[in-house]
Image (tube, rainbow, N blue to C red; front, top):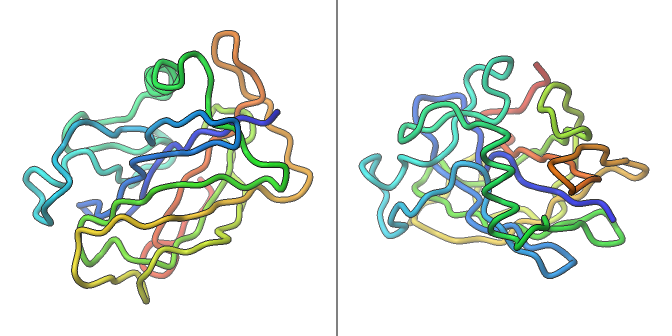
Length: 189
């Protein structure tokens, strides 16, 4: 069974992030948060404090999982350990069709859809290939007025994808990251 963990909720190349994956819901019933998520309040739109844990990707080579204003670089090993703890020793799995359900918290207008996705199949964050967004959050050209808003997003691995990453005793791990498709397209490092 392929397990997947969302590395970055929203990856923006600007100075501030405006959306974050607050929940990753697997076909196996396991739920976790995206990497970097903390207990920041989710009822406002300003940087302080509502965007402090929103991942930003500026340096894909040094920070493949991004960085937050709150904690700096998002560590992959510690983030995987947190996710495994949240999932009682397991990670969310993809469905038979390769899809996984995500809850996207759009902090403010710049957190709107559409989004693009990339997958890393060995859970190292080193190489990424295009993945699919089969259910987009609301928004046009990366803008959504009236935040904060929680939206459902469905991401899917391309057909034939093999997840080969490991963390402790858990195997078959892939990582996914998202970006506003129009404003901040994801490009491989």
